[in-house]
Image (cartoon, rainbow, N blue to C red; front, side):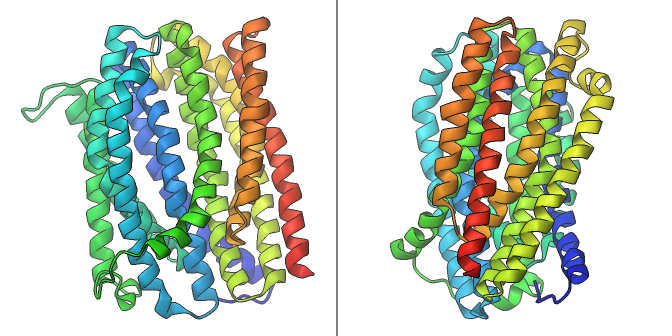
Length: 448
């Protein structure tokens, strides 16, 4: 990051930051995309099992990862205020905390997995696949959280292309691992959908090791000495990150968990319906990486300018990001509308699944429009370290409005499973409007 004077300079710098972030996020989402698509080719039970497992894991991962994301505004504001000497200490404490969080998630998952799966109305085959997909995936949780901490450090310095190259190197390996472990090869038996969990864990180890080598050997990262002169773990330092990270994590958890809750509620419908819902959600989530990337770039840019006390420039970056999110939303809507049938056929060849997926995709067009506004605004607010109100907005709009509306429509109208999607659209729209109000309020406070 560096200071900019004109709008043209800001646009250019923002694009330099956001494009690699977008490619990185797309690459990470493509891993889940290939997990789902390739599992679907192994059978409808495999697709449904991976869908259940992924939707149990996603809110946990995104929620905990929100705690890790607090490193980004912390480092961005430190570099903006020219306090680089503090950066390695913050990153090292973030590494300690990420490992502790990973161990907590693994332990909690071991205790809760079977009770949760048996509480759901699933066939024994789908339950078996979901269970062992998550068990094998858990082998990669520690390197995943460690990589995300290192990535936050890399991105906060504005070096988002480095993260992009790491993921682009790992993506082909993920496809290769999926092929080998799902369908069998090189002396390895076919594990079906469970194999995608093994492949994903292996990929997480690869990206973690690559990022460690880069941090240790390449400039400007090497100059910070993050992997040398280690300090002891500090609960005070952990709490500083947790004060910012917990509200971020909970806000993300409340958003992502509503999608997981909807998938679990849909377990009362047929395997075809579950598979179609997951296929449509998976592709829409891939497109959602665009506004999400804008939000992550805004955290870096806004945080840097706030750290330097250039509040007018921070506000300008916010407007640039929101406008970019809207443009991305229009593009995503066109893609979803124009290619709904080819997209549906990617996931499964069963005619019933394809037809249901096409219908779900139409609803996805509308909910991603609201998400495309909300995600950039959340990123800008994180740049200001304003996270507590975002948490309250997420809880109220998603769980107070979105899920109850969906449940009523699904159970008391002819919409049935599609009613849940209408509820999601409603909750996300209310949330986006409330977040916009909060951003305008914070901007006035810093200007005043």
